[in-house]
Image: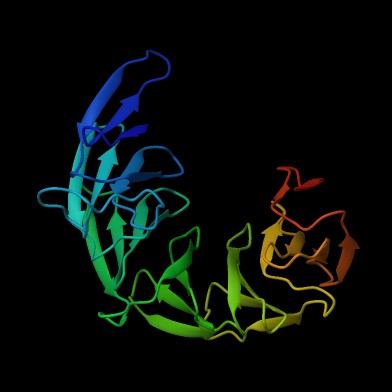
Length: 276
């Protein structure tokens, strides 16, 4: 699937026959995100992109997204709140979750037409916080939102609309879900902590807090696909080391590197890591 900014369309390309179907979306969008199963694509204007063009003649909507069904070759467009920022999908691709300045919109993709529920995030309408990361549990039960400059993360139940605030330590800089979706893990750089929340009941189960090594500034986490090992590091400070976190014992061992870290990737089998 390609997004075509020049004529406000999305092209669905059959790679076995080279057949191309162009579908109209709302005008002046610049971004698409695809569901895990590939059936759905959500198109919208992403103001966070470096080349986002605000100098557009005529009328533009800053509240709408277009849901493209790549199987039925249909498009449905809806208002989801001002400035949609991120789109996440459940593991089964049956729901899309759109995060905007003041709302989380849950789109039920299993119904025709698409069913929408807007959950009010109770954000400041004049100066809403900037969502840095959003993670959705595989079942679609909870959404976890990390905001820039806040020492808390927001937990939103996507079925009931319940909203809770979780203490994320001082200056949380990374938010991840464990591969099985049972834990939400936050790295708090300035308090040198890893905080682990139970995703089945994040507001009721006490958080588990682990101290990270004092010798390192740690702000990022990459987990192995098995979830048994995590790599902790920083890409901000000029530190030439990385910390291996054994999730079975919670032992953390720091290893020296030749240069500071730019990026980290773990192989699909979890047996090796590439550190750039």
